[in-house]
Image (cartoon, rainbow, N blue to C red; front, side, top):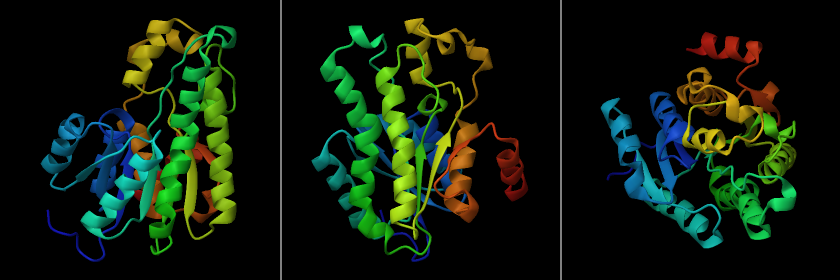
Length: 254
């Protein structure tokens, strides 16, 4: 595939094969970004890429396992080889497992959750920072959760990792003011993660009817807006899509 136009902004989206990541890639494409879908299995991203192409845009895909340093560095390097720049990073890849009260969890599984949900975004940002430093519109969006601020029974690994991610957002905003960094709590969204949550029967989130879950396109619209607009007054914050003032600002930008 040919290189993008010189002024086309490029966004790397992790965990973009489906769910919020795939929807965010499409929303970014509609905002004029070239989305690069960073996924463990590129074949699994075929539908997401097709949806972007049907919308009249284009996308690229790179193999990336956020739990592996070498894989992350290779993914960012491949992105830069293909398009020569990187302007935005969306840290969306995540996992809910292990679900269960802390005393019954496996230490390796617990540590693996932190490797994906907290160290994963760190790895991606670490690899991307040199390229982001060359962008005049650099942005990072870390997909957060209300569970970063309110404990949920059975989610000790997930809550702990996401609480750390919220602090990582603040640290990045402090240390790298040229990069507009945000956290975004997407709400309870109809994704494969919610299938696992409902099957567990653990805590009140598992009992929310699927009909009451939000579509992935809802948080995706906020992610794309943050990357495109880079609102200075929101930098470093862990935002929620349920905030009415934020919803109003998104509507006004449409």
